[in-house]
Length: 485
Image (cartoon, rainbow, N blue to C red):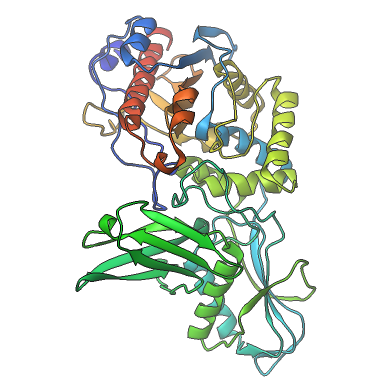
């Protein structure tokens, strides 16, 4: 029955949205098309038909015994892309603990008398990458409800819970929202919404930190329209502002997209001040402080427990959450040393030779083999380290890309995509049969590195290449489920 269901019907299809999407939305986009695949088709023929170039490496193993069932180039070291987030999840769970929560707090350095803080008000970040405008707005409402109206001193911001880094990777176009700055004080995944509308012979533009219920405008990051064709965006940063320009030929009648913020602490503090003003709380302009002042806590916003934070990270592939989690786990001052700490931990924990330059997989210099990734999955399965329960159920899909409800084969996995790099790793769970762990890495790093930085948001040929890689992943999984499941 299983073989019959697999032949000519369902293949899994995945999309690695957050690595490429400029908007903070759920995974999606155009799924890879399913194709009819005989269950016993030769794996080598599938690889040849995919015509990917570069290297294709995979391993599939029995989840209980660890016996390798099938492999190709198992030791080939390839960029893991966002599959690295699976390792980051295990690292964070071990170092921080399952009950860990990231907190953003508001402190008063003096007593509150008649609604006025006799001293400074401090917005203190705790490395919460998931903080959103609506949560900040609700926090301000609670403070106003307690009677807070102002301060005698200053409005301070502290973001030293994590290192302040301008970006995750230095080889990405300036405008891509998946490459934000890192800070202990984050908001909206450190992205600002740019909206434009046609107005006469020009455009009206605004920068905002919109949520579902609050829409604070942002002044510290500014946009102007330039009469040109290229480049589409330019960016310049000052000490207390960020200036963008956008090419007029790229705008059309109207639209919006999320752009990265490079001064995230200032951004979060400005939005807090704007929200406070709307609630009748008057605050001066925010001032950064290098050390956290002592004071009484007036309110806080906490993230969900760490497993839920990581579950969302794996589902939406949020690079900022991966970096904040990894940096919090390592306590290091930069991504290079933090990635090296996770590398040492992974080698000691799993006996693998992988190398990580960050925690999200956005850096193209990270390397892992399919054999290494399967070792990680086997150890997690045997020891209950906590990865399998938070992996995404990617489903089996029909030839139109729709999930087949009630399909007997379940696949939980993490995907990863960079330009001319694609990976998938996880569990195949047939009905009542053998559970398997697998890792598939396809990549042509030389082709990726040859793309000019300015064209890396959407280089020619990458969509077709990625579609062929995902199709191959689906074909291999269907084969393994039928032959070994």
